[in-house]
Image (cartoon, rainbow, N blue to C red):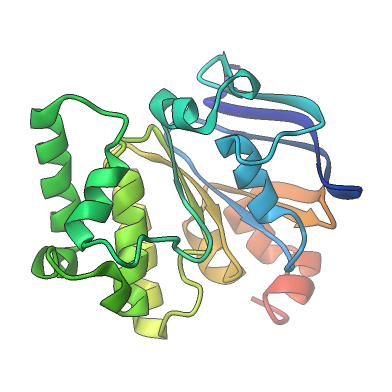
Length: 239
């Protein structure tokens, strides 16, 4: 079976420190797949390797049959991968509209861009009210909406989300996860990194558990929720 995204035996280093060791995972069209694990387990590095921001020292990464290791980060975006990074990384001095426009930097078809902007603003109505506002003055939840919306403006086939609920109030966490499900229902495949393992596994078709740069467990979201090892380490005991 051909997977939409296929990582095989990926090693990655920061200097002499090995961040990933023989990581293999796949994502199929239409899925929500989550990566969970402790801080420093290698979750963010995995996403950065897919985006071309970290170059693996070994292994292969293919997306829709294309070798990503030969592509620069901007060409990876053009290939159909959007990335909403940890910490949001919005451009604080630019307006909400300018941040969203930058998300479509690789596109030329103005009519489709306008249509996708309307979709983002329908998904996140608060952003419509703040289009001319400096992004740095938004609340934490609004900045997260902007980061996801900016990634959606590239019209990704695969959307990668790194800690989208980090630092948000519980009510906003529920909103963000509902939006992720809605985005997926509209046809976008999702690869989700989350510290909130319970919420992530509840919406995921499948999940991987990273421990010290290695895949320790792989199963459906439901089965991982019921795993005694996962419950003890990431879910605070019995589910």
